[in-house]
Amino acid sequence: MATPMALASSSSNFLSLPRTATHLSFSPKSPVLYPKPCFSISSLASPDLDPSLPSNVHTFWQWLRQEGMVSSKTHVKPAIFPQGLGLATTKDLSKNQVVLEVPKRFWINPDAVTHSEIGNACSGLKPWVSVALFLIRENLKDDSRWRRYLDILPPQTDSTVFWSEEELAELQGTQLLSTTLNVKEYVKSEFFKVEEQILRRHNDLFPSPVTLDDFFWAFGILRSRAFSRLRGQNLVLIPFADLVNHSVSVTSEEHACEVKAPAGLFSWDVLFSLRSPTSVKAGEQVFIQYDLKKSNAELALDYGFIEPKSDRNAYTLTFEIPESDPFFDDKLDIAETNGLGETAYFDIVLERPFPPAMLPFLRLLALGGTDAYLLESLFRNSIWGNLEMPVSRANEEIVCQMVRNVCEAALSAYHTTIEEDEKLKEENLDSRLRIAVGIREGEKRVLQQLIKIFHDRELELDQLEYYQDRRLKDFGLCGEQSEIIFWESK
View 1 (cartoon, one colour):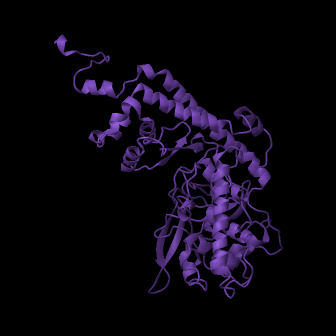
View 2: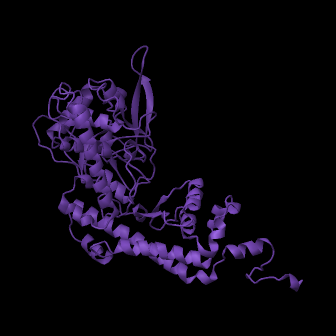
View 3: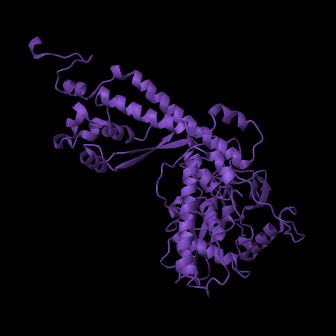
């Protein structure tokens, strides 16, 4: 299955979920792609495809040819690789060479819904929900225009949304578990709304029953295969192009675009053009990069795989200004002025610098006592700059303790240690358990890194330069070694 979301910055473009300490981390052992589903084989075969390919893949290829999607610019064809179904080159390809083009009339997107029989009924829905209903309805029709494409789509993916309770239990303590459960509840709530507002009121448009399982299937297809970043297109399924798989070795997301081509004597057609981001030898697989910015947790949620790279491991720290804080209003005003709010989320990536706003926010959160004067209106225009550096020993110590306490509490929620996870990874695990182990280990590595950084920081507190030292230097009242220069010494 490894079907992508190419070109896409992220399928989250079509679905925004409430944030809940959810961006996580992990690192997989091997599959950077996930396996394709199995198919039954028939004697019906296309002469230019491997005869051992499943019959529905042959039928799909024939449909592509009949519809004109296989042309002189098509340099790939479906093939089975160790990772599953993908696109094999039919000739040597150079970097950025076009490998296929798909006319806009075959795209499945909100425009396709608008111009369909269910367009009016779905006009007020979220774009992804309307496309999901369209996909379900087409899949229930024997005469769907996209029948041959729909027949090769998997019944589910390895996304954590489709994991059993037993499999999800392996994610105990991880942020991915809470994220997955939140996503599942969100999808359920959207289905129940659609069931009430659309399905029950339009039996003529949906004569066959639409179930919650159908809705989750459509959600999984969109989450894993939708392209975005096309001009004016934030959510689009593109048959044939979405067979392209992901590889960790591809480091560029520049692989697709819209182009115009003659469609007749006086008309033009819009095409989706897929290019190979690397040079490829004939018969080898073409890969793309799904998204360079996604953490392993996001990869697991969207596609059902993780990567071994350390910078895919992440953990989201969540902090909030408590309403019981005597300086709540002042702190909230300062936070909002600087693009934050009462609650702030900071994605910590393994072996990467902290988000720029994290330490200033934590120092703001810890402000009090003899440092509270910095909250006065006199300092309002300069306080954020002052918070970018240590304020006082007491303030910096509170910051260190806050972060360490949060991380130590998070570590205590896992049911395994890093050492146990490392040992498990040496075994022959199934794909979902390998993802779970990688996620657990990755999050714990980020948490342990944070604990070490802030423990080491506490050991340096007496050597740091604080706000008052900087102010004295600014006024020429303090030397380079922080010794006080008294007026009387002149």
